Image 1 (cartoon, rainbow, N blue to C red):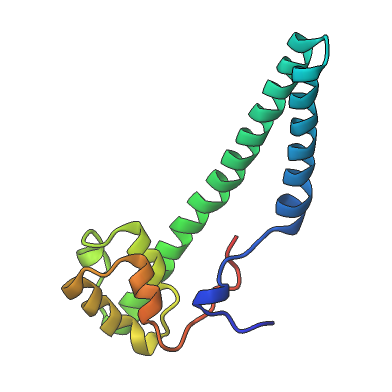
Image 2 (spheres, rainbow, N blue to C red):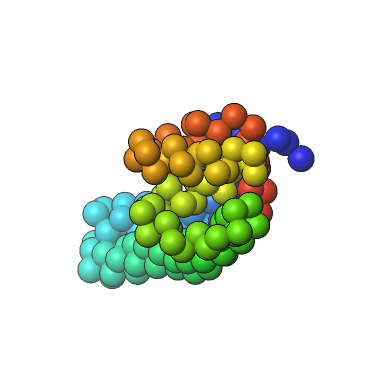
Length: 144
């Protein structure tokens, strides 16, 4: 498996990104084309609206279910790591961070985790800045 870093940590789901969406876009394009050129404008317009609705629904549901669950798991993992390393609860300072910042901490190894938290508190680093500050990237190979 390829070593994960800032530049390659985004992950694609091939059947969804490279089959379902292209097919949906293909059918949507043809239904829009026929809605404009066909004498049956109303029927093809209705079909195009259905494809637009399916496209939006599929995108929202895919993101919604996987990311909400994953966000909860990442927060639990970080709370556990923080407690293991410090003996104190992460919840005492967790409210000072945005979700983007909290999720960026997961890529930091234990040796960089606590100093990075302190630096993020002191300098109010964004999630992207936190990711870029990580020297020895700890890959998250199970990201949905």
